[in-house]
Length: 317
Ligand code: HEM
Image (cartoon, rainbow, N blue to C red; front, side):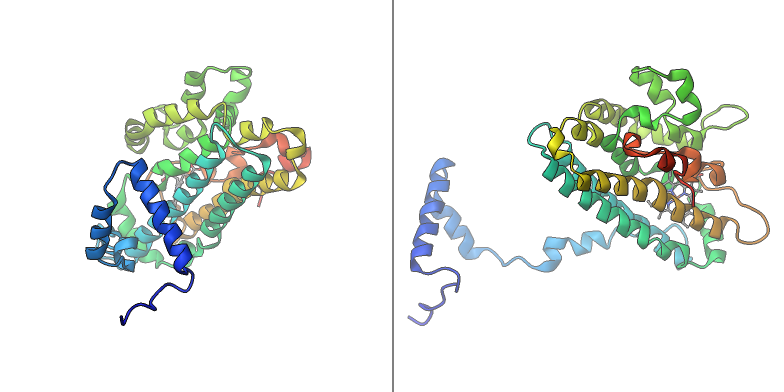
């Protein structure tokens, strides 16, 4: 019996018997014939890296619109960011579960969300330093009217994190004070500012397309998470679970998502759109120099955790 010694070092004879009993139990519970599954194992191919990671599928997604080589960097880095943001939503989904969210769990999930956002912030040099401005200013025309502004993942994170009120544009807050009318708040959500023509009040094509595709989903998300977004989950914790470490981590996440990333993103926009003689219009057509500055939007997830001075300095370089 040549192969009799080929047991896995972790599994002795006893463990193997135990394993087989557990398997039998599993298939009995599922009312499935275990032997058929064992037979299947006999013929199954070993999993490999490329199938598991879906490398071919992943590499089939880089479809540039022009032949400028640096457009590939632009496209792929957006995809990388979308994956990082998806990791953020993966954590936030768990942190905003209906049941079982403790202070310790909230801390762990927000720490992870912050870590992924920091990767996006710190790696943004790939954009800022990494492309030839001459090429960028040519291929970007082929991308009009698409804009990173249309990233739904970015918006979803906002709904997971905070009350809808904190996403209402500043200039409307006085007027809407005390309102809990979702429709009204939605009408004045801050990011509409990027898509409204100041003179005519008309919505840009970029905004119209975006709303058409995602607005229904956003409304559902926002109403689902009004009672259990991160902020509400924090408020619902017993007092002794609102630890200084949790509060500090929430504030740091707020800073990196709403100030540090927006600042590095804005500096990048300046680097390319102010390259050459004139300041250029963005593909999404916003009043971008004003709109993108975090001290203009003053978007924040947990304002009640901030001191007066922190509020005062929010978004400044
Ligand atoms: C050279 C690189 C980039 C430039 C020049 C740039 C420029 C801009 C501009 C001008 C806007 C304002 C909307 C508009 O009028 O189009 C914007 C919005 C936005 N961009 Fe970028 N962007 C760049 C890279 C990225 C990347 C890599 C991402 C990652 C997904 C991204 C995500 C966003 C988001 C989420 C917004 C909306 C921000 C908000 O509403 O506060 N951008 N971008």
